[in-house]
Length: 166
Length: 193
Image (tube, rainbow over all chains, first blue to last red; front, side, top):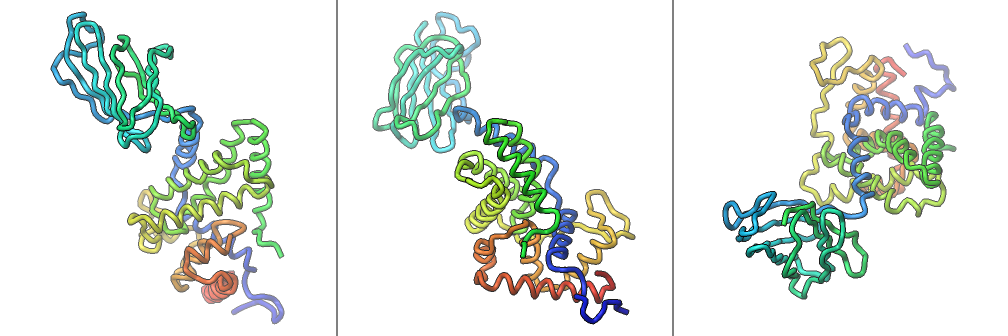
């Protein structure tokens, strides 16, 4: 039996009912526990002043040429590939005696300034990509290094490789 | 007159105060805002029919949009509504271009009535919600979908909802009313209110 009077609306009003439907779905389909952490991590990454490129491939052309403390008579070549949000970078390092040459290639080609810096952030070399997206640094310093790619119009944020050994 | 369910003004006020603090330079206030509103954005995005992984991604993108262009919000009380609209638009955009889209209706949402044993990971509904769920499931698919979408946020943007459901904007209000009437009838027949 219904106990509602003639003039009384039957059941809850629209907003009350919608609020109940909302609470039902909150119970049926709660957000994952890590939803907030995921959002905060994405925001934290956005707050970095550069985009970090990701190492996707590394290969030694000759076994044993690369070590944490390269000997003076080391020679050989190795390559590294990094991926960014909108381009990939291929690096080839060739070592002859105590000199290391760096050849780089950005795909797809674009106008970027290339900065090679040492472990402490000091600038070692600065150059630009040519029209084919290539660059070269004839003689690099030894030790840990990283490369920063800067958009010449400074529209995009700088892209930086993680540190790698030369 | 108001579109707001009863608990909403405080949510909107709290959101506005977090947003003001963040814009005044207090970084931790953004974390507070994220904790406060992400559960609502989750409902908004899931109501659009995206799977779990895509929904998480859309919620994250929505917040990044706020971080990048939040200065365009002139009235801080509008921040919760702005986020809902941004989330719904992004969800709709992603759903249109993604083959990963799976309508929520096709997913089995594990649920149990209160007197049934609940295996781990399943939702146990209390009596009221179990009755409400039973009544909702007797409505048309379009009504179920529309009511979930409208219930997910407190000031729904009918233009975006209409686009995502393929309905004329002007029919959303009346359709919502008819769906709610139908739900009320089902509740009365089920002996509840």
